Image (cartoon, rainbow, N blue to C red):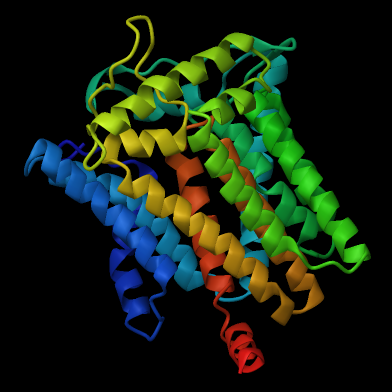
Length: 394
């Protein structure tokens, strides 16, 4: 903890990579509108905290901004083609296998192992109120379907399961050779043992969209940009027009009906907080709610709005829409095998955008989300594809 900012492992790595990132952008990488959206959203995190807390909010805001901007920029400059994305999958697979087996072991044996082991070495993580550490965090323990909702090395079972599920479309469509072609998809399904309805929803969306992609290819219909873009816009419009009822609908696909009702209350009171503080938000302060409700916000878009005002979530969400549209359009200019992987990346991001209405991303899950966004931004701007597109337009 330095200057009120907790230096987690991923945050330390992010700060350490800053000089390298600046050097990479100095070598001729073109800044796009999408980059500007993410960088502005990150910068506004700092501005909103300084406006709310004063000068002491600068360090806090920088910590949150780094968690968003650095993973995005690292993927943006590192993943330059689809082969790079395949290499990333291969690098991730051993770690996913270890994490997956840890989740299965904990779930079946009803005993947390990984996090208590590391806590015995490095000490317990802190529990925060209004952004201030007040006590040691307790391990989450819950049971469903006769299984422990295991988290393995992840901070929460839901995040662990979503992290694993996020790789399912990529491994299914990457076209890897040898054993990773089969072990990869099987490993991603180990997230099932987090026993979370949000994870089950992610698996369902992933599989339905991948099957739809296969069918559309068989009948030679290339309308993915329209499907993904239109669906995302309709989801957002339905969410706003129905006063948050989309959140209630998604949440009702839950193994616990009380969870669905609670998430709806979070949306009702959280959105009112954003309307009351639309420009700079309320930082780490707790939003007004019923006395028996906890301060947690199980909605990533809502959490960004409560903390930083409307600009940050609107810019990130707008980037997601633009990212999926541009990536979908660029796929016609790459080989068929790369088209499949690019479409899988679109499916993955679309699923995470939807599940973000019922889950708050942080730690490694947030890092993965912005890594995928950065990879997609880079791949949608492949020079050959862009050049071919301009020639076709002329």
